[in-house]
Image (tube, rainbow, N blue to C red):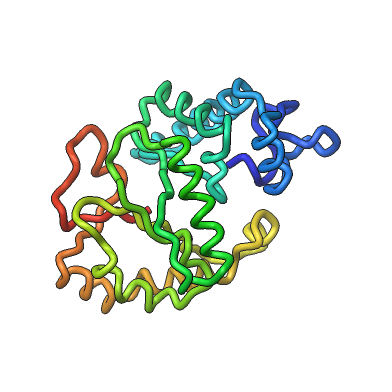
Amino acid sequence: DILAGEPMCPGSSLTDVRSGRFLTFSKLVRRAIAGRIAHADVVRECDAQIARLRIALRARGSDVTHLDSHRHTHMLPIIARAVRESARAAHIDIVRRPRESPDFRNGASAFARTCALQLLATRDRCSLRTMSPAFLGAAWQGTDYRAKLAVLPRLLRAGITELMVHPGYVDDELRRLDGFTAYRETELRALADPQLRAHWASAGVRLINFAALQGSAAPHAEHFRLQ
C-alpha cells in the first residue's frame, strides 16, 4: 500500500514532505503522470513491505502469493515497472492486471474507472506470467453485489478469471484509513452465502486462491480465482 498511513522508507517521492505520510490518491496520480515519482523510491518501499509481510505470513505457515495495490496504484506510470522489479526479486510470480471490459450498466463512474484501468493495463502489462487473462470486480463497487455474483458463471470465459473482492468488517481503524467501508460487509455476506456457492459449483465454477497457481500450469477451464 502506498496510499494509507506512513511509509516504511520515509523521505521519498511517494510522500508529502510536510506530513511524512503517503501522498493522497489524486496527488500520487498527478505526480506519477508528470514523471515525478522516483523508480528507486518505489522499489525500496515495495521491497520493505514485501519483506515485512513475508515475515508475518511465514510465522503463520504461509507466504506472499501475489501483489496488488489499494486503488490499483501499482498500475501508474513508473510505479508499475518498479513493482514488477520488486516482485521478480522476491520470486513472486503474479501481479494483478485489472483489465476489465467497460460496461455502462455499472454507472458512469465505474465506466470511466474501468476505461482508465484498461488503458494502463494495455500500456504496461503488469502480470509477470499470463496466468489470469480475465479480471472482474473493479466496476462492481456500489452495485447489487449479490445479483452480480448470481450471474457470475455467465460472465466467465474459459480459463482463469480473477474476481476482485473487498470483504471485511468495519471498525474505527478501517474508517481512519479508507472511505470504502460499509460495502465491505455487503460483499462479505454475499460471498459467504451458501446458496451462491452451490450455484457456482453446479455451473462448473471452482474457487481457488493464488497459492494454487504458484509454480504450476494454469488450471482447467472451469476454474476462477478469488482474491
